[in-house]
Amino acid sequence: MSLIKKNKESKEIIKDIKKLKAEKNAVILAHYYVDGTIQDIADFVGDSLALSQKSAATDADIIVFVGVHFMAETAKILSPDKKVILPDINAGCSLADSCPDVDFEEFIKKHPGHTVISYINTSAKVKALTDIVCTSTNAVKIIESLPEDEKIIFGPDRNLGNYISRLTGRKMVIWDGACHVHNEFSLEGIIEQKKLNPEAKIIAHPECPKQILTVAEFVGSTSALIKYTKEAEANSFIVATEPGVIHEMKKLSPDKFFIPAPGEDAECACSECEFMKLNNIIKLYDCLKNEEPEITIDEEIRKKAYKSIKRMLDLS
Ligand code: 13P
Ligand code: SF4
Image 1 (tube, rainbow, N blue to C red):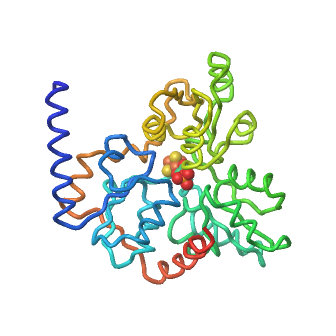
Image 2: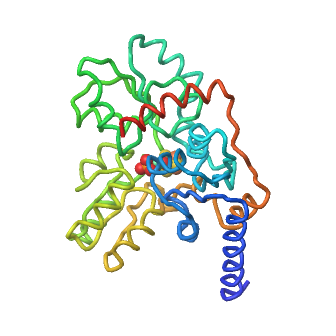
């Protein structure tokens, strides 16, 4: 298909999406990791904390969550009376998958008397086993809100857990999970890029392992990284997180340069999250038109999971 025809078709689909959205009183929420075209038509683009706050506050009848499954599930937990749909039901998360609820329950039993803090990248069942949910934006604040002698279990991301432990000085029992995107950045590749671009600041998400965070000149959640690139005096950045964020970074700073940090995989140095990238405008259109795939959650699990997310929102 020619590029002109493809662009014309995309424009038509986007027009149809906007029409359907208005007819159905739907809101489109998108994460910064999804394709830029979708970010541009979404009503709200955010990181996982901002998106959960938005899901709790919307008065739309339908939430179209363009992100991954655990994020749409979180929206449903917070807004049970709304229909929550996700363009591709297979948009999972390797980090959430690294913590099956049955195993996590056993882990908690092995460490009685601990407060369970779980990263938002978990299933509803894991959230139901959790005392307080956190995201990379508020994890330090939430840990520091607990008494110093509180025994803490942190799951499922070992890199984020260890990073917070180093920052706060708190010892925590940490679940051994990781995200396949953030865990796989190449230290040699990043150092090579820094040699080629000595002025560029290395910035990284705390889901990256210690060796990457050690060379990073700024570490922060998705929204913190975006804010940093806007406010920093530097003109270029080596970005060690999912490269979808560069869309927003470029929008905010059109004259700055963004270099996606290379991954370990020599075949593909792109470090994209293939789950996030399962979303596209055709699936978004179909999902809005047919109002499926829909997210459903057992009510007992939802109520328990709600408590742990609510505690996070109250502390944020
Ligand atoms: P944020 O909480 O920074 O949005 O991160 C979500 C995520 O999936 C990171 O990989
Ligand atoms: Fe999950 Fe990693 Fe993808 Fe984020 S980047 S959604 S943690 S697999």
